[in-house]
Amino acid sequence: MKGQDRSQTFLQRWLRPVLVGLCVGVLTGTLLLLMMALLVRSVDVPRVAITPMAIAAAGAGAFAAGLAAALTAKKNGLVLGLVCGLILFFVLLLAGIARATGVSGSLAVIKLAVLTLAGALGGVLGVNRRKR
Image 1 (cartoon, rainbow, N blue to C red):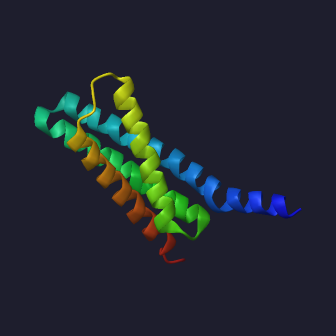
Image 2: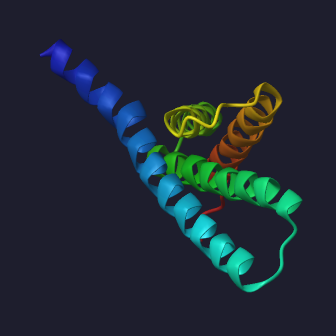
Image 3: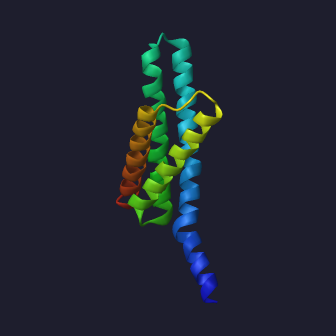
């Protein structure tokens, strides 16, 4: 009986909020990337601005992931946000490697910093949000 309680607690405390957060984060990031792609297609955006726009969209997705995870769990927002940001970073890193374009070390560090900080911020804000 005690083993079931422990697995249920792990599922409720960590796994479920992270999965909810990741779904929300991926959906948010994808929608923002689609909107930015439409913007780039319709307006003459400098080529230099495309990478920061993509990192900003990924950061917004990580923020939404941390926020959703914290709202689901109602506690441990910082840790849940960090975990969501890290997982999203590794998903983007694997996608970059699979594309075989190579991964720049400095750009990877910037993405790691942006995604983990945005996820953590979303988690903290999600836990500390006032009830109405």
